[in-house]
Length: 321
Image (cartoon, rainbow, N blue to C red; front, side):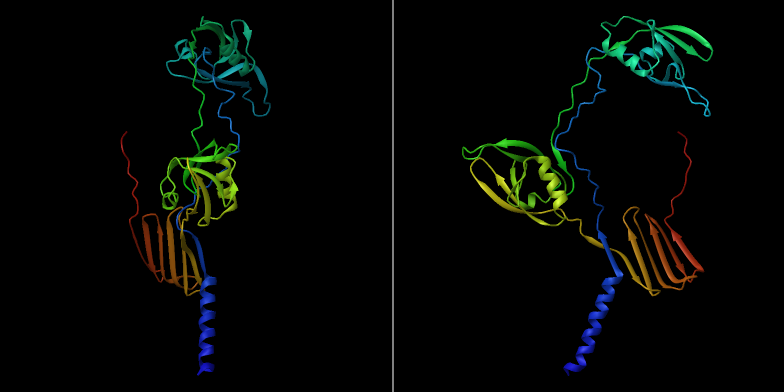
């Protein structure tokens, strides 16, 4: 009896292995791409306008020759754009005009105009010497004083993948010991695994798998580089009175079948971006006994390559603005 069952058992195992080899999987939902930030980040741009500077309401670039065969930087700077209702617009300047000088100072590089805006002591009118085509003229530009912008302030470091939460670095002192770095939970995003582990906004995370995190960015970097989605990770939490350890199962997008290949008998494939899937039965190279294809909402059925049926095709319509 056993000798009769062994071939059946081996056949079932072989068939199972064959099917597994013919089936491919991918995440059930699109996993967002994540570029990790460095530990130290400067949000202040060198090009930010300081308070008290002047603004002419235009953007300029170098004055390059129009010849493709002989590109040359010519005197002056070319106006690229003019802000509607801005100082330059009110003075009659136009895109394409060449600014040759401002208050007698030659302007052969955009930095010259930037320096004038940053260093001017008052908002007195400026005399622009301008060339438009072959006409050179003067225009008086009354600048506006820039009140200045508040520099950007960091709110938190975001982990949109592994824990779907935002954290901020804080120094905490536990039981009169030396201060240690911790990551305070500032915001919890949709589908975050933290609430299921009992972690809420305001909690402090000290370590991951008994290893100190050092900073909020350190926590995010470690979770996304050293662990796989769906892994179970031990978080060491702290509050005013105690330290506790809880297990967090990192966000898992799940798996779905992306491809089935059984020779000419059956072929199936699916994609998330764009949302599509296709199926063919008895693919005989020149035609299939039956094939189906869907891309977004558009669906097509084909039988023997002779009979086709399509539905839910989008229509192009023309509307008056």
